[in-house]
Image (cartoon, rainbow, N blue to C red; front, top):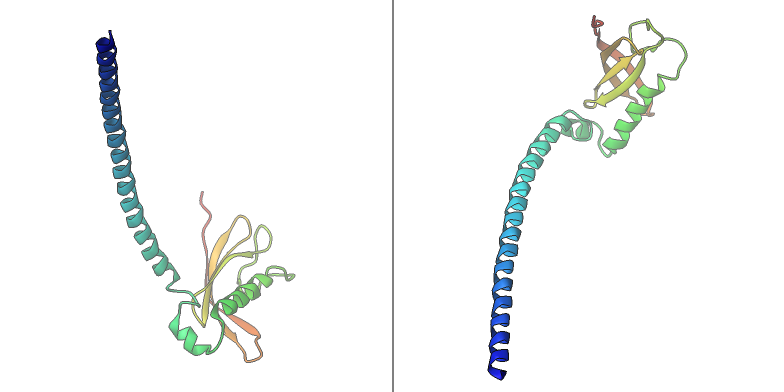
Length: 164
């Protein structure tokens, strides 16, 4: 009887070990598959990140803080603060009464307001404007005096036709 119990325990232990071996192998294969998928996704995300970084570099090429010439034009100036100052001066024209002096069109459905402003370099900016129905863009030259006042001069403008 003692032999039978020992034999049963041995067989039972062997079955448990075989079960653990098979189960561990399946778990290991599943984890390897997950790791392979994660590495594949990581490489895809890395490629996408490189694409986005390249597009971002192209996008900020025309910006005041990234422009080396502007850095030489405004020595010892915080170019990001200067860009914010120029943008704020343009947006301040939205709150003045009457037509906007930089937009050579009278608003057809109200006044034209600037929606978006991008400072291109130390001399120019481009801005998008709209009156809610009509929209357009304007290229503006600006100068900053030694006292810090900003003057604007519209160089070119366009008003998009309405879609039918």
